[in-house]
Amino acid sequence: MFATDLLLDDDYDLVLTPGGDVATGESDDQHIALLLLTNQGDWRADPLVGIGLRRHQSGPLGPTEQAAFNRELAVQLQRDGYQVKEATIDDNAHLFIDAARP
Image (cartoon, rainbow, N blue to C red):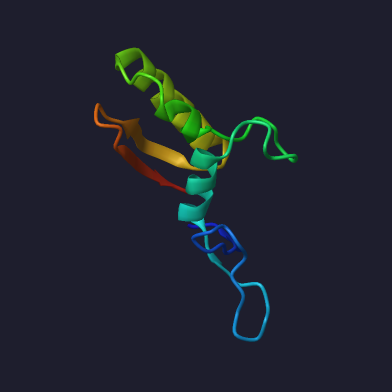
């Protein structure tokens, strides 16, 4: 199963159909990207949503930071309704996310 929502383009603007309507479609990748990019407090409906990836970019990425980030990523995905098989960041700051909605 996948989520259906309003679609956003690469600049996070609404996608419009040729007829001028707001486009909808499969949005799981978009949901995950927004979870990663937004900070807690950015979403009025749920202030606990958001990982704030940018705040992690300039800090160290040792084993302790990796473990904390991996846990935060898994918790945020689960809160959004995903079953997480794997959600990790490696030593080179590459993300691997294997999650799906039930």
